[in-house]
Amino acid sequence: MTLEDLGYTAQWENYRKEQKLDSFGVGRVIAEHKERYVVKTAEKEYDAEIIGHLRFSARTRSDFPAVGDWVAISEYDDHKVLIHSVFPRKTIIEREAVSKQGEKQIISTNIDYAFIVQAVDRDFNINRLERYMTICNTSKVQPIIVLNKIDLITDTALVKLITTVQERIKQVLIIAVSNETQKGIERLKEFIEKGKTYCLLGSSGVGKSTLLNNLSGEQVMKTNTISTSTNKGRHITSHRELLVLERGGILIDNPGMREVGIADADSGLKITFETIEAISENCKFKDCTHTSEIGCAVIAAVESGELNQSSYGNYLKMEREKEYFESTIAEKRKKDKDFGKMVKQVKKDRKSNKY
Image 1 (cartoon, helix red, strand yellow):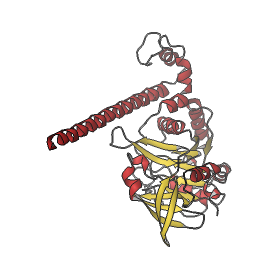
Image 2 (image 1 turned 120 degrees about the horizontal axis):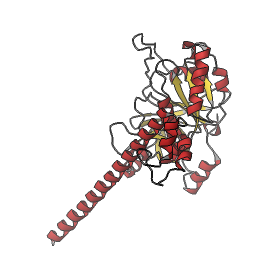
Image 3 (image 1 turned 90 degrees about the vertical axis):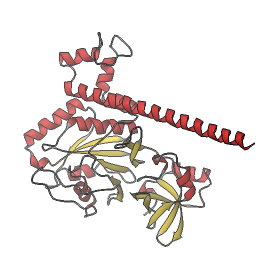
Image 4 (image 1 turned 60 degrees about the vertical axis):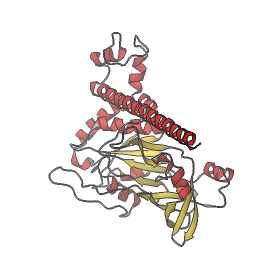
């Protein structure tokens, strides 16, 4: 195996040389467990931890390594390395951190494509698909929708479901698969390219870990049975992990996400809801919020049936989330700035009193 098989490119090698990091080894973070990492090189895998300087100079959680990152390392034991530097990230898939206002959580980095996995049974939710689409579009990651568990519905119901998705989400590849019958798995494999990195996104129980096992051809991730009371898989993936597939692609599994908070999603919303964006060009007011204004072309499109009511409601909900996230960021920055001024004043007062 080479670093190129893990997705390494000339861009990162040039950065390594420019930053005088060529005396260190290079590896990719393939697993993270509470600031303890597993790093894979061309030769082997290592347990890893970050050096003190990197830890203390980090301003936010995003300054720490994440699964998918390329890092400069030095070996200090047969199976252990120190992480000295995190290379610049090509892409970052992130969401608003759960229960932490104004903070982000990195899902994975340096991703080329995202498989958005949704089960077609009673848990199917097209609004959630649009939410994942917005996260991908914000991150500039190419989304591919994977409709799983098609063995649970009829062919007629599946065609109707795909049509419904295509009416709401345009120009995105949709692949229907079944982990049970293997239908569609080979077609999905055809879209996996050597050296490209893919991640699995989806809620708990949609079959991501089983899908990963089917794509890899071996039992690499633990799965569990279906709950008879909820008809959902008991999802047990609790951390992110990167795996190299037999065909050469790199795949990152992620824990199922009950909450998918939107963060810094302005560009992503515009791409996901491009129909609404296009219609809004005809609004009477440039700063139209599309909620109650007279002369709003978007509201008119909803009332005439040109625009899907549910998609419009989902758009407004995510717009509110984005605005709230931005306001909490501004509030947090103000508090940090005020605290910094207070610390400087205290130091100044102490210095004055000393003399």
